[in-house]
Length: 433
Image (cartoon, rainbow, N blue to C red; front, side, top):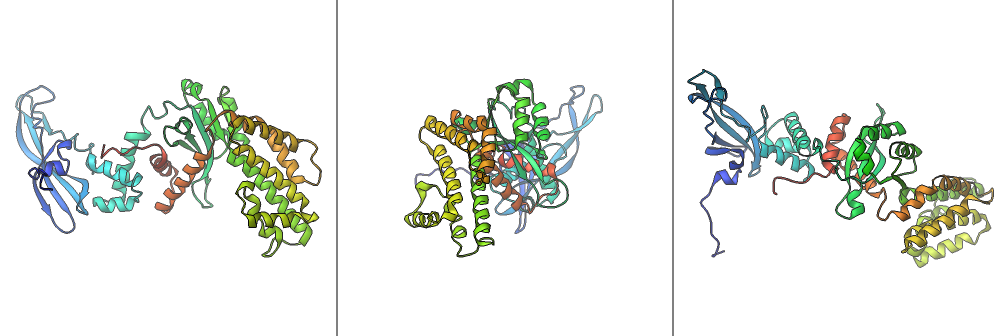
């Protein structure tokens, strides 16, 4: 440290007042709050109407919540001059536009800090308000306004989107009103391996019409650039995408395809359980004990799990479960195939085998076969579109669940949509750039 060179302490630089067009002229610090007295650097003493020289008349004060320093709320107390034009008599005051928005209660730096604290530090609005020394509503308005300025209202936010994902999301767990929304995700960075996915928008409801209306509102030029739409098994999303994006390829997400087979396996196990024992699964029942093992990929089974399944399948009563389990494992192998061409061929063979000549006793497989045959094109499209799945949409849903927990729930969908876009819409910190 003996080679370090230190400058004279400068409160303007430390508190970043020079970026706001302000200069510190005094300070008052106690255990609960810091107040920095400031003046506006630019005199701004020329009349905006006639260009005449203004004569200083008096000063007015303006208080702005600023970035908190030293674990205490910090307030900027601005001393603003008022002028009268000697030529035309017009009155005006010094411009503080660099320091804050008109009528704002937070400085521009304070608003940026609040937004980053919400998005990057995962603080609640209440915690941010306490750090700034303002009310909850004041902090929330500032955060929302800054978020709209830097992200939500950005006209270029939708540029470059070529792959989108669509999924449903439960935004509240109450009986009052519709609890579902449709989320639209930009999967282009994931496909191109340039970054994570991001939330594009959130619309009320989970229906074909909700997604179709959102797509219809997009410009034709934007829709022409969309190449792929990833989705789950809901046919409403498929129909809306086909009607509004006829040139785009629809891809059914592998997670949801495997989930269909897993559901068929569970229903078959439960049916056989009832048939053979006359009751639901209980501790000690072979089928119930193996319920999680049945969902594990064959290549990941331990020796103990393999032995458990071998014993389970030696009983003739469990032959239907074994047949359904075999289809489930073949599906996993198709998706895990290192060669996508071989995986596609395996999936085509699988769909063909469960779509024809399935014994009537295997009711779950017959239902699965009809579904796979109906969505075969969307399922197989995944193998032709590397790194295209709706998995990142599920990840964003998880982040939104965390957001709702921080806020202890939301009652207003508009506020929830705004916060969700800030949380998962690709916001990048600005204060420390």
